Image (cartoon, rainbow, N blue to C red; front, side, top):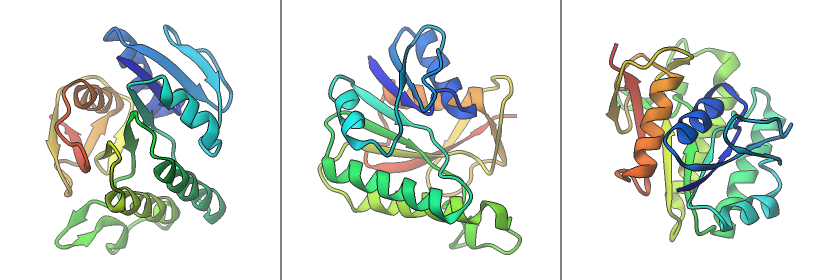
Length: 201
């Protein structure tokens, strides 16, 4: 499979790119820096450059977008707008968007709206929630949105469990998260909807 990974040098994206390469896929690793990623073809690009996104998507089977939105209003607005332009352009490749945990629901409400949710993460979580709603409102687009557990950090593989719109666990390692994403790309089970994942232990 030909897979483009945006954010391929970040905490989550680098693990996705590494896992995809290890599984034998042809990977284009996209980052603003264009830094090399072992086993992949490095490319410098920004998610706000829709024309480049479409060119890369045209020669790929799937595009994974693993880029945080930022934690202030300006970057979050740019990221929401970038996704809206991608949706409007209707790329033929499958899109897998890595979002945040803030849009997951507990007790009928979103985590981002729950008492005690950290203010520092609120702009990013609100932006990712808006991005999810934009994908849900789209038609004719092959997309999947994946939310990690509330805590995601580097760590060993322990195996993972899946959920849909509510947290299925408290945390997930980036290794387990990458496995969940590659498994979804290789054997699609959540087209046109969101899923979440958590480490088993």
